[in-house]
Image (cartoon, rainbow, N blue to C red; front, side, top):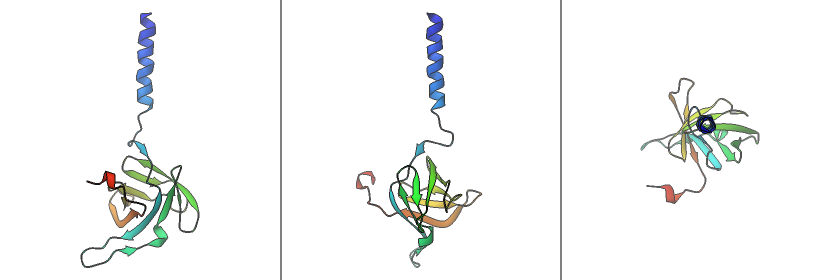
Length: 125
């Protein structure tokens, strides 16, 4: 009986390890349109880049401006476009409504994508 308890504890311990995700918690982006732009400041308006925007849909997927589809992977606050016309693009989340694009060396590029869907007022500070 003692061996069975030890075995059960060992199996339960392995189950916890199997659920761990390297790179962070598996998540999805808010559904809806994402407008990509070069940010502005007090003197300069943002420059919208409609060719870089997309719409997120269920199943960690997106629709590009040309109507083609692709997929993305979100682990915690990092997003990688894994297929489709935007494959290889990477982002750092800045809250839940803004993503900042990253270069291959993880340095921020001068492009952000803003969720254009309804604002969740219950989550605001």
